[in-house]
Length: 471
Image 1 (cartoon, one colour):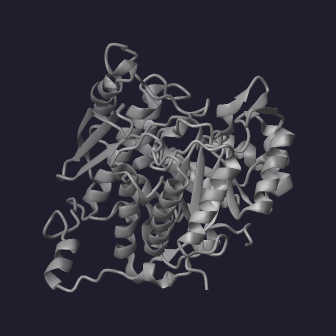
Image 2 (image 1 turned 180 degrees about the horizontal axis):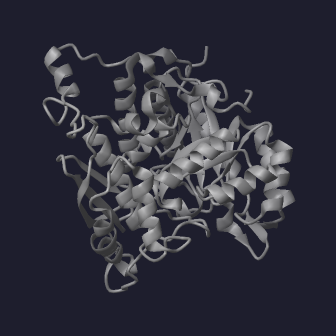
């Protein structure tokens, strides 16, 4: 028996709260008792927005971002912070930055903060917070641009998410339950970025993210344990080989490697040394972020200029040689013909995820659905800029047979909204970085809390999240 074989059931052990006092503390709500407020006619009263505030805070890269607080007339409060991406699609909603080079090197967001306080706030005062579509549409109409460029998607999204959080607080419900209703019960498979390349790291590796996917676990908590163990084993492997264990933006290691295959080989070795079987317990996923190396009509990849057909052949070889379940942005965001061909060639074997291609935009997603391009949607709330539009995109994808992956950005905060969205929509997959750095771990920890809250109703998506993959 290999010295790396282990009893994988160890990760499924749970901590048990033995004291009633501790359990009571966990279940305690902000208000000691909750009763539905009724108006004079006996109907439930509305949760009216009566205060909105915004401030500038820092994200995980040390850049400013927007945080918003929304207060309701019943005393409920919601807070949300907006993420920011490093590799951004050309068709994303516009993130408003100040441009003052003497302050935060031009990356300040005071204009977006002012937009919340001076424009969006006054427009929403008096609106029922439970009418999310109304509040979001009010802001979209006030901005009046197709890409939210006037007031800024970072301003609109901050308010949108904070309104939902306040409404959930008013209803005395966790956010996932408020957004998803009684059917929200599926814990997503974490796609954990443990090697960073591309624009997320200072290295020669072209592919942006190399992820482990613990699809063979029985619970989310077990999956998180497996992923963390592989992460720590990978650090040992890198140290033994004299490679850097410095971290990229998303908490993954960023060694300077001779090829992208070298990164995959290291991860497979770490999986085996952690006691797991590649493909059976833990699979692999890639985010190529190909638009980042698409120049002058060709893909500048591993020191060569490649066509879409050559890139497709390269990916097909990877799918053949490694237990890959997902390829994200394998081609440029405007290479629709290449995407369609790639989907036809290997879309029955692997999840092909549109990130920069779709930018969480229902219109671009519909084009993909109509042309049978890609088979999965990456969901980033700040790409489209409002919660309503995000949920619309998820709904469209799921109705059309596309899988959905809820995702963070490389510039994150301690905000955990995306964890709740993943469960609310039964998305089945979440991408939120390595099991390291508090901005990434915050989302995983929130999912642990949700799994505990759901108790016996919780179901881990596992292999069912990847219907095209056969080990």
